[in-house]
Amino acid sequence: MSALWIAHVRVTDEARYMEYARRATGAIADHGGEFLVRGGTYEQLEGPDRPRNVVARFPSLQAAHDCYHSDAYQEALSFAKGAAERELVIVEEA
Image: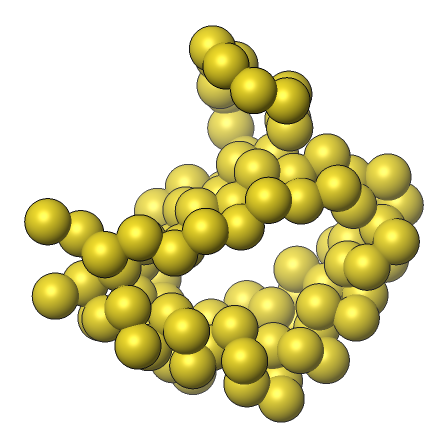
């Protein structure tokens, strides 16, 4: 069963965050992830406003989990730390 990786982000350091995004793209693809949404127009209905929204589909919850904990993604994530306020969840599709 596939899973969605859903991130809500407020970027505070554009250069560092773009380096994260560049590196994370490869790590996500290496685990079978494909982007469905990367930014774009949105309407905030509840919760904290995070103007960058990202949704990626993985072949399974395990693949999304493995991606997040992979060395490549963790290296990419080091560029996002201090460069953005983020929430990230993985959800198995019904």
